[in-house]
Length: 93
Image 1 (cartoon, one colour):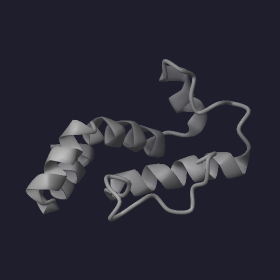
Image 2 (spheres, one colour):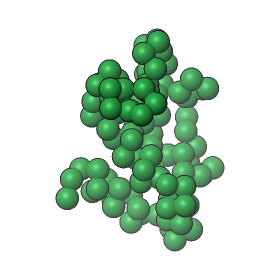
Image 3 (cartoon, rainbow, N blue to C red):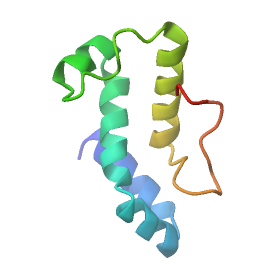
């Protein structure tokens, strides 16, 4: 089992049944796979294999930092519901 699968399984097992349903319905494993990939690669390498050429090459360092911070929060399970929202991202993040 790879790191991503272990992370998803560990997070999923800690959720209530209601949050597990939200997790699946909102395609959180997919979001986690994208976040994981971006965190493992740098933005330029990730962009080369992304269908939408994201993250944009014109984003400044602050915008990229916010996106990476958001990815770290996704990997911890934040953003799934109002009990644990994303923090300190702003619109750009």
